[in-house]
Length: 281
Image (tube, rainbow, N blue to C red; front, side, top):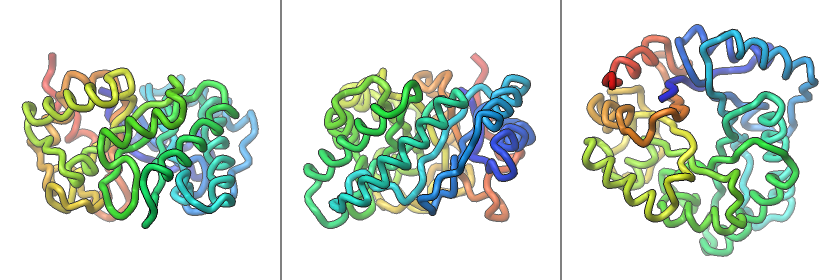
């Protein structure tokens, strides 16, 4: 497992590699632009080359890009969907340029509308964005289940992949906090194993592409997306230990999106804590 953290690319894309290295990360996740704005960052080839050079000289083996929060591929508003295609395409093209492992995306929200048409709309957006990029995979993140968010169950994730035409660049990013919040018991090796058996039956083992490791402030089945620092929430240290030692997660990027002790994000100490939970083979 490539344990790492979400870091900032402020000051230049290559700065994310430096920040990840300072944390002792083997994987990082970044936003390729402001997460709360539509305006894309105008990177040039020099930016990408400097990032690739810094990464090659580091211990960082995995890079995820998180799509911006404004993207709603399932929106009933054609303008929002058009903007979502443009933003997602930009993220995928940046991923192409830096050799990213994947772009991670919240699949969208049906809001108060029916789910199936929302999934069909989202699938069309995924397909359009993938068609405008070349190599970078797209990983749909499971959600905590609040409101009309899509991807709260493995069945919904499978239907979303199907709605996009089954493109082989599509995969899934599993978030531990969201799994617990949406009602999947994952706090012991046996329980997590059963959940993943269900994932493989419903979605497919080959679709599992990346991971987010976050503790949860709220209990099993709460349907609330509230991240906590590792070992300080409902998942607990034993739940985190089960997660990082699941054999089917070996080799995947596992990124922390925790608040940190001062709300500044994951720390080197927290990355080291997670690594200390890994049992040597």
